[in-house]
Length: 481
Ligand SMILES: Nc1ncnc2c1ncn2[C@@H]1O[C@H](COP(=O)(O)OP(=O)(O)O[C@H]2O[C@H](CO)[C@@H](O)[C@H](O)[C@H]2O)[C@@H](O)[C@H]1O
Image 1: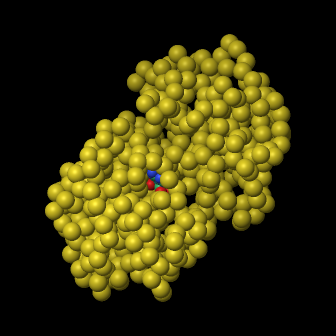
Image 2: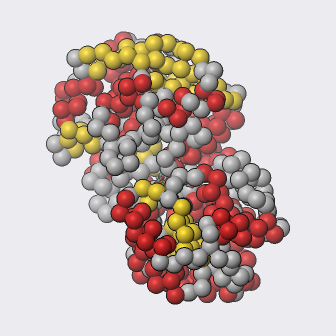
Image 3: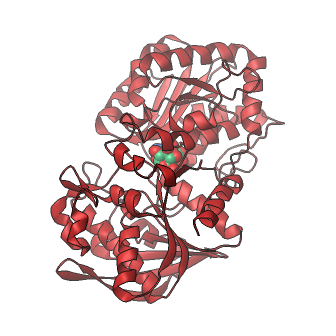
């Protein structure tokens, strides 16, 4: 199949979160299965500067209609492996910036123009290169206008650009909602400004367009596909999602076992497997040392957390349970950055318990591997979680995950109290009390080494590979065609 992916992030070129991992691994796996895969991403500074892009071929210049004006840019392409081509939509004014979406304090004010340009440029490239895709698969709000632009370009030019369009919701909390006055930049028919189009409470919603106008919609876990049809999790789009109930399917993400594998992980000071966990103890000691924490005896649990410091990730629930960490003999390592208030609160928590609690307030891919490997428990008390990746990394690394029972966390972690013979982790309600209860159960479990080892071993034996996960996408593409 000729498959085109359109996304704002792609590991290892640009990553702010799980979207990059998911798109990167899915595309690489599909290419490995023999499909002809092209991925379009914006030519952000980090991507253009990446060594793989150094010899990118200039495909063509672009002139994109943006309302009553034309904006120029260019398309570059490189191929990091057989069957996989990465296309960069470049326009310095839009994408040559330090980070993809904002300056850390606020989002860029022209994000709507940037991603309208991006999507239009992808449609134009497909047309001018005569790519004739079987499937165009767009991810999240930044690519959500793809189905509309493709179908209108086809109508306007009398061509077929793709047979089917797929839209994946990685996180419905980020919708790309902008003032309706930006609609004129799309050059789409005015009737689309209404309630049956992109209108969302008087504004324009990119994500709504993706949900309504793609041939199929997917979410990144079965549970989340049901949750977002309810007011509690739908972020105002539950009604819109409900209209596509027949066409929506939840496909669980996988993990890239070439990158996330304790047997071969190059970021670790020692490697290990389910059969020989000696290396895990080395990683644990190294993690504590690196984070300037006191060494911990074998019966003192090390809790790890890696995430965007955002409400979604339940950081405030950890803060609400500060007494647990302060009073018990344990260690807590948090790697994360994001919301300024949460950063400040976690910094204060760590400052109040030197030697016991540490925060690394940055994005650090290598350290994230060490936290996964060196912790005994991974803390993930998300308020909502479309899929979540770290709970899967944790199981692969023999680190027992503590997760709230929402979204993909329900689909990927089995609670050991509820299922003593199958449990791979600890789950609880997404509340401060829920996490408190989970932490107490973790502390008790850690003293029972036989049960802890059994839970750990079952997690390590699970197959979360993309080899398996990508099959579901291949079946979806085939059934859509
Ligand atoms: N400070 C830091 N340093 C290094 N690495 C860091 C980091 N902070 C986070 N990460 C990494 O970023 C990724 C986060 O992935 P998640 O899937 O858990 O969440 P995210 O909410 O970003 O993704 C959204 O999309 C994905 C993909 O579909 C869904 O799984 C998820 O539920 C949804 O919210 C992991 O690889 C993690 O290790």
